[in-house]
Image (cartoon, rainbow, N blue to C red; front, top):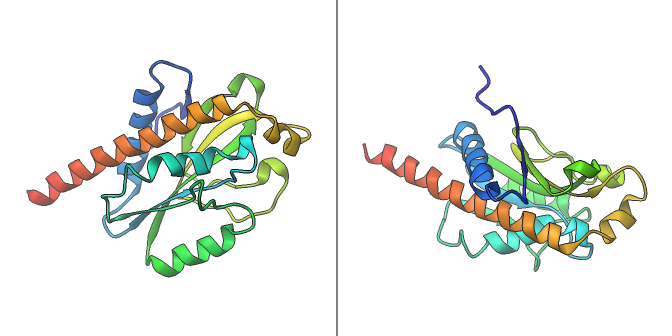
Amino acid sequence: MNFFPRSNYVDSNSPFALSLFSDLVYKYLSKGISEDKDLVILCIGTDRSTGDSLGPLVGHKLSPLIKSYKDISLFGTLDNPVHAKNLESTLDKIYGDFKSPFIIAVDSSLGNYNKIGYISIKNTPLKPGSGVNKVLPAVGDISITGIVNVGGMMEFMVLQNTRLSIVMNMADIISKSLYISLLKYHKERDYILEK
């Protein structure tokens, strides 16, 4: 039986985006992670390209919110981005430091015009760099992507000319949704452990 919802896309411009997406993240997190896994949030992208800055912006916004959680590790911020040149070494570090990491990967993507501004979540790895024809390792037990612009041609140029407001709005929704979901997850887990 599949517990995942039929639609895993949310329009970040919807007034209900935060509520809808945080519910989705919580469902995926609570059904996917087990007690013996270390939770790692990996935000992929670079601050040198507007369209590719979604991951580092999410990491930047989420970092102060999760500081008090000792059991959550975050990689990829504006100050220390994880991108094509250091993704493999970052994955080596994650798999070296954590015996059994459960990775939530966040990245931007290109898609159809009518899906710009949509964010999605899946219980499959994401393939960073595939929108710009880069071959990088697939990553994540859960993947979160935000469609920042149209794909199909001149991807590097498209990413450079993406509107910052679209990326910032999605980064807000994703970072807050992750935080709300982690609060719920920890509250529920602590309640079960107290019983």
